Length: 279
Ligand code: 3HC
Image (cartoon, rainbow, N blue to C red; front, side, top):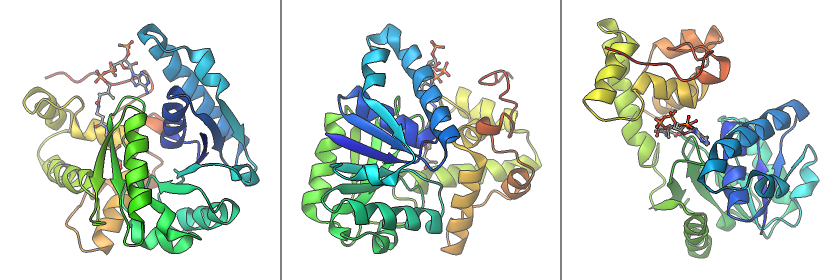
């Protein structure tokens, strides 16, 4: 199948890698060549790690091409939108791509925007739904498959099967509610963790989260890992929609350019790789 991925950031490139590893022909699109280069480097790094686990990096790489020409979306059977988490940016991208290939199923990797709201931008809303992967897409099994009010049963069932065929664990979400299932739970945890910052350091909270709650990463490390800009946007969106998700420190951090792992600095210093957390 021909797969077109809009956006070659951490999520877009990771999702493209997942499809290519399952044998699909993938085109990775971005507006800038340097973003595509970065996306391909990240795929190359990941495949290098997976080589010892039976993955053939060259074979997978051969199935991935890059483009800055949106017209190349023509002829795709599946299009996944993974551009910046912002209604206008996503809306513009969806409007443009859906006019080019009317037969494709289009999935959005949004974390926080209602699928029904986004579906207003696409030409055929029946063929549009949420496909919410988790970071890092190549290692995380879960994918939320979210039905908007206008998504057809056929599109929904087809996409659940497609995710199964990728070796993923699709979680069918039939109610298009804020945060779907995972972020609705996760952002309550983030809100609680952030409220502890008055008395404890991020390291102290994360130590407990890992050691006592058995999380593979502490909550502040996870905020850094998924990107403080993305998480700030989600908390703002939550506030706008009346949800009690808060993390007041995020605004100042993002404005100071501290975006977490992607900028090497957030709650932690990532310049030497994943930070160690000790008691
Ligand atoms: N591709 C291939 N290999 C990778 C990789 C990738 N993308 N990322 C990490 N690895 C490798 C590491 O290099 C390491 O390999 P090595 O042993 O050869 O050095 C191995 O995987 C294990 O990694 P780590 O040593 O860093 O440690 P972990 O065992 O903790 O595994 C993890 C890493 C899978 C990322 C784990 O920490 C984890 O599950 N963290 C939580 C992730 C999570 O919750 N994601 C969801 C976030 S929420 C979200 O995305 C939604 C959005 O809407 C906000």
